[in-house]
Image (cartoon, rainbow, N blue to C red):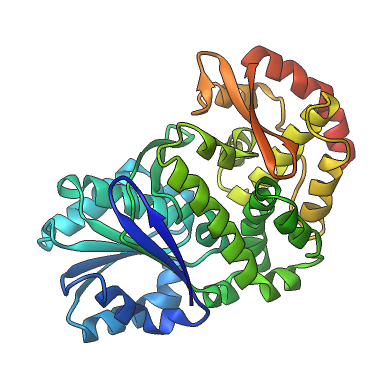
Length: 363
């Protein structure tokens, strides 16, 4: 069992990583929670596979379980869905002493965390991420959010879970596409973390290798992110580095209206940004191609016709990293050496125009 300890300003908790731990998740939860009402938030796809088993484990230990199943997909990541979950919880008498469990991917984790934070001004929750994206990224760090008016994660809070349980076995039921989109976040983290991790992703040549090396990839990604968030819980400093690829990726994801996965959009965002700053001689020569090699070999997209479009630029204006028309862009000065580059939005438009043709050519 691998245990990564998180210390935050509010609480200390653990991320527990072990293959097969889903079979004893109930006992692990009962070691930190006394019996209580527990709402298990999951989507229709994950609930069919895993909700019944977890419910039985917890029922046997004295917990009263309320399944809270939502539709799969980003459309459920909304204030309307938060309100519906809170209504269901109130109807069955949830109190501040009860709790929620996020059983699912990143959407479920974000939705559950925000709901827990808002219900009666805050109840306990924990995360059991079942996708690679959620295991290596969104379940770690306490960010919660929903989308609003087509803008991703525009409404959210920082709210830490009591525990995160990570089991690579959950990945066995993911389609190759859903697994690979999470690998986009792994490649991102490896580029931020340094040469050792980046070399590991450089040795991954196909989807089967992602599955074979899942435990190591997960451990390395979580360990790096944990170090970052403990030093900067509320994203005032170096935690911004974790947004590498996201500033350009989020508009692409939003404009595809659910037809593109998060990690796919981040993949495009990383390549676009790095090509711009490699041309500007801030990122080292050849880094864009190194990213492309890691991403393309497992089927991740590396460009989009939406890059630089008026709709794309419009969504950049609403990005959380936009400060009075200045974008805070995460750029790699070298592998393992991210920096923040401040660029006026109008200059970003010009920079994008300079690489659009090259990006289309390298697809």
